Image (cartoon, rainbow, N blue to C red; front, top):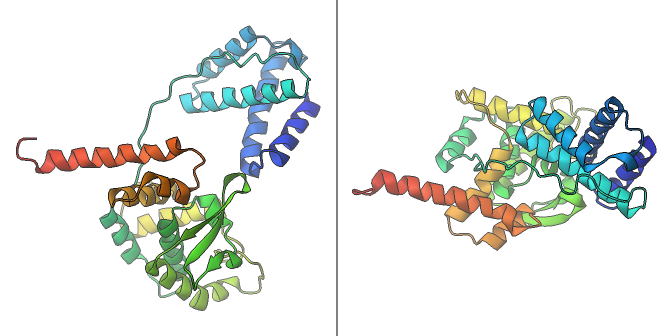
Length: 295
């Protein structure tokens, strides 16, 4: 079974171009199912039946996994068996007919424009760390890039003259995103007066660095955003993805068309972008109810 799992991982790496983070999650989910198979004394993937798949689903519910986690685990196993069928290792997919739980449609959390302005002005840019933090926040809001995409930006990806950023997204797909004057100004200040001081003796091509001079990680970016919120005197938990949500929501609120926002976000399907139209509708309803005399 471990041999087949390794084959599946190679398929995810080579054919699907999935990130190491995604591949690690897939591997963990498949290994969890292998443990279930051992408990049920099923020693061959070919012997797993639809009833076994249903029993595994029941076990996940019994362990109080969230609906989203259950859906992900079953989807991973469905993909795993689909791969095994393609390679003729098994004859059927026991997870093909398993009904996935209905997920609650949650609207993306975002900042209002005034809230972001407050955050921008709350950052002390008198030292290299502050210059980096402002450049990070400005660039993420200006482009709507994902946190992992931001961590992967190299100096050569930034065209300061044209104010364009080359982004490598999911599946190693690349796209160009323009950024505005505020982000360009913050970037120039960081590059001229901040990055070199933080780099110290290190030498690497990544744009954003931590206080030790090594490339900033996804976890590091998450920490920075929470620190910005804390220093601004706010007492709620945020995640950097809220900046991406804010980018899309503000563009649509100000008249941008859905296809353009889709391209900027790097969404493969328009349906992924359409969730932000629900956000704008909710905002319109809220404004209407607050200001219409007969609402």
